[in-house]
Length: 527
Image (cartoon, rainbow, N blue to C red):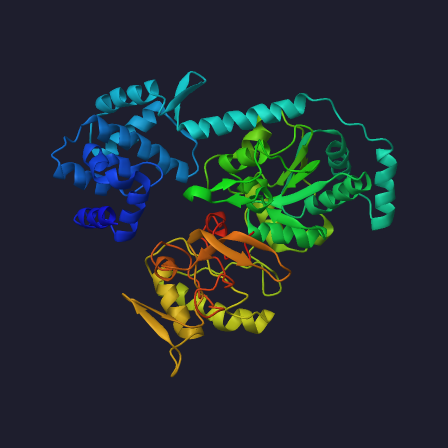
């Protein structure tokens, strides 16, 4: 304990909080101060990933040169990790050197020497594509190679036999009361015979109808099918559309937090007991998560990947669905016919207009999509009017429960900061007897929506029915972060008293890529 207190006091002079100091102590133990003194840039690496400026401050304290090897190597690793957070698994060598050079203001030539040393020690890996060297973090290259090898194995394995398949499809059509489109039938046939399949298509093209048909045929053959999706919301929607149990990938693999490191109970040594995995919203899956999933599959297990290749790729590193389709190695069916029911939705039609580069239809009062042009303060008033009055009056929406506002910036009259204040004053104003919390310039009241941004994997949870698990989400500091990170303005409803693991909240996300924050969700609704 004395060592921890000493470390907290030591790191406080470099503006490192006590909480992060405790994480440092847990990582390095009693020898933390000696390790930091020898190489302050260890703080920027895994698993701590402290701000680079903290490490620079400590390095300056010990009179370390700006071009020392530790700093140069840390800058390269930091650049790759930062870009992994932006969705990139690797960077071209030239781009990596240029970016790192601009970051720490050192010449690319010095960074090149440091990069060569990192490659020699295998801290970083290099791979050539069309003669261009790309630099990887080792775990991301390993993930890509594992995925490629497993998919190649599945495609080369002999096809499955499906006796009387066309007759069974006809029976399904008679039972459902409608005929499947030719491409839907092709997808059904391939799902029953191929070991891996990609089913893609835009909104309203019948992906769910096709999946339901595939599920029925698989169940008729007594196949054990696991339905999963990358987020809790997507899994819930999949369950509603299919009438069958679906889970997140994390829950399917069962998370383990032993020793302070997140891992999965189901892995290459403890395989999943299923014959087919149907993975929905594949475009949202990153390389590390997909690597973990395929590692836990039996060699005889088939996989059907469903998603829209034209949607934004995963927030995590990699564009798995897009790259699998572009490879041409995995059997793929692309549904392109918009069915009559979907044609009634202007949202669906405009989604296809965007894909094809056609102008949008602006819509009217009776449509589910309409475009209103405004700017500045007028746009702010318009948003507030839509949320509080016009949309509830016209569609019967509850302004808090049914409406969410997305905005791309933090500042300005239509940024998160201004809209948070205005909408809070309109929807949850100050009232006598209503508790509220003043945090810096923000006021938070009971009845506000909050965003949860941090998981606590050590908290246990219980559901009605006796189900138990670990991985509750805490709302600590989420109130303030929701208003300071350029995230869409949410008015967060507090559904419990205290810090109960049974609390229910609405997770909020950064526009325009919602998948980043769908990962952090309350225990009662996540997995």
